[in-house]
Image (cartoon, rainbow, N blue to C red; front, side, top):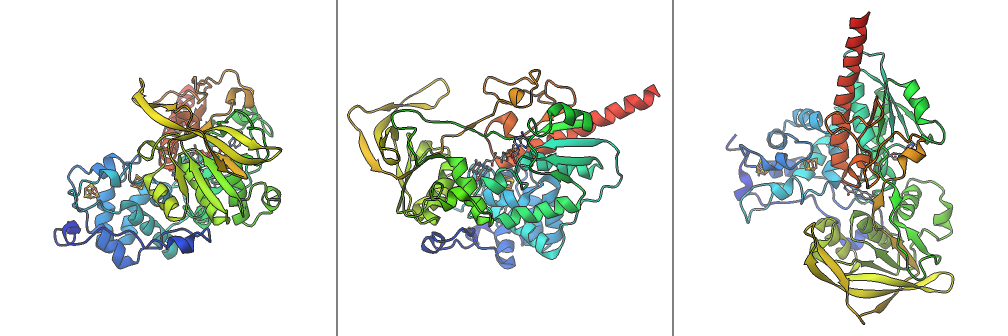
Length: 478
Ligand code: FAD
Ligand code: SF4
Ligand code: SF4
């Protein structure tokens, strides 16, 4: 092993080539090119094969990172794929969009000055190669089971559960109110982070695996939760969180002030070739406009970078804290800056200006005060510091809360936390309704794809256990 690995001293860290900002500003293609095999092998060989791999400890899926890095360095890619897909339903997605700087790579212990192993890029390379070479096969369970599971929500949590349950032989149907599967992977996250062909090729594998999809089907409207419980032996709720946090104040009802997800969905649909009237009319299109995005998370970063690609005249991001305190990934901030986005740190909107449509945002400077009980510094406006930004499109990206699920599903017995997330037993993933489980953002609150995958997989294991116990009890009673 020694001669193949531990090369961090002699081989410098290298990401796959990043397209020049000027070129990528004009299209929605992913910004990183693919690793060539020799590059992936040489980057993987930088790993020092730690006895206690902190990269894996800080990966929500506990991926066997050093093992598949070693297999990649040795050119044993099919085995690397087998191992990486054993713990992750979507390694090709996580390799692209996990905030690796905060998870695996941020905890790589390669000595200071040598920089971490590029784990995400290698993970992506392994699975992209597996798809290319035809190693990714439809699921063929060893034995079929009669029991069926209905899953509400075709996002990463619901799909990860579907994959795990199908592997165990269950009959699985996934219901989604949208017309495509993928949840935020298809309609939230833009192409330049995750090309849609990557999601659609997984959709094809799922269909060939016998996982049934009922699209354009909103539970609570088209079918009741109660009917679903009668149809299936167990139900998993994986509906994500979609109630956009709003902003009030003078002028907040003016035209041209739009919620982030409406804007991103329109852009993603347009890129998928759909006819999107609100994009065509210009309402959800930044072309030629002065754009102000309010917020500092991943959603705000996706909006500013989408606006650049749509041909906005100027794009500014208004965030009430500073760079060090922003929730979005630093890598994304850097990408946005390279692409020409201007960040207005420590500033919050006071009023929206204009007659019928917005023409500007009056903002006030903020300063960071003492930390509150949660340890986060409070923000306070600086008196007399108001200034105006020109804007004919304002995008609100202030985060998301859960919809009112007990009302939506007409199930008052479904209990929720004070934040509106579903309450589950944290070991069994079961909600207050017997046989109804929940996973992903709807339990955790707005989080990350990798955590949704983890929760979906864990919930599937618990559903399997519950259904097997039920079957054993029924057999004993016969
Ligand atoms: P979702 O992905 O939201 O899927 C839920 C699904 O349930 C949806 O398809 C929805 O249509 C469906 N649904 C809801 N209600 C019903 C109903 N009543 N009937 C039928 N179907 C229903 N995370 C990262 O790790 N990296 C990133 O770069 C990143 N970028 C992001 C960018 C944006 C713009 C946003 C909004 C989020 C981003 N996230 C990112 C977070 C990540 O997308 C979510 O944490 C993850 O998708 C949650 O998965 P989920 O399966 O719980 O829910
Ligand atoms: Fe890193 Fe995410 Fe892959 Fe885990 S799943 S190894 S955190 S990129
Ligand atoms: Fe390799 Fe870094 Fe993980 Fe150690 S922490 S096993 S060096 S990737």
